Length: 512
Image: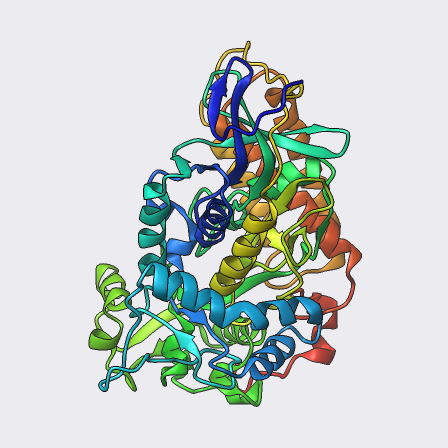
């Protein structure tokens, strides 16, 4: 074994760095920036080759602040989660929210948030928020945050960014994580770090319709779980109620409803007041189930944007509508997989159950979201936990240990092997682990997913290919979701057990 504190360098044993960050969304960039500020040399490893490969770039609505009232935001988070959050985690979020936004987004990156006519910051409101407290840029906030953030860290003299590179396995020894094996060489390249921060994003690729990038395959969650890290709340998968219902779905931000857009069923009727006292601004899980019920009863649901100055106020969304041939004020919508509220279990500094392994962003379960995430808190959570994890991950030297041996001795995969298996996985998740779940169907899904993982494992033993490891990670993550869903028999938040439907759902008022 060798010990070094000389920062990022290449040796005969592989590459070494003080802090390794895997993932380039807001959480990964925040962790890298924070570690560099503490004097660490940082290697940021990412599968992405352009900003819109990261989920942050796809975030529309904005980033929540407390606007000087942390208790109000805390209560909204608790209420949206159906009382299932970790209150200490929410305290951490709201106590550090405004400082993090001011420091990084406003002072450091100088994000050009929208302003009112008199030059003040323009705060909007989204579903289940009791106040106007969300900073935004048009309805493309993620793009306007991530792109300058990536440029900033790429220019930082203590941060090296390595794009188009996937982490395949964690390097572990006696309960400690020492880095990752990347896919930079045919049989993998070891990268050793004093501490490793996973910021690998979500699980959207597990479903056929998602608001996530196609490479959101649950990589960090699967690698951590296979290494023995604790995971939690994997059954809590949020479906956004207003994604475009046609091919090539895209998100219709809740800011639209926050500013006055309304949902109408196939009969032209507003219906959300019959499902929840907050109407169109009810928590996401309630709206998603109501939209699906009305689609089944009346044929479709549309988002009516006629109360807005849609073209001028939301030009990015309006352009996407025009690209899909939507010229009027009514946009067809359907619930679509959006966000994993659970993930790798972490504490208030992003520390996992494995020594020197951290997790931040959507792959992490901080306890902030519980069973249902409040709108526009994901960017904030990624920023706050990224900063805290990055600072805590410093001060350790990389230690070179024996890395997993990845074999690459067999021929390439059969044509379309990974694509066909992914289709099978998505069909299983769509049918059995979607917006509503039934215990018998969850068990059926588990059986299918176990067989699928067995088939993938048979190939991965002797082949090192990114698409194969992504499929492995997706199947592991899907199994974790199925297991958690099967163990939780109570309908709460976005985990909805269909056998409870007769007791817990308001019947739609539309004619059958």
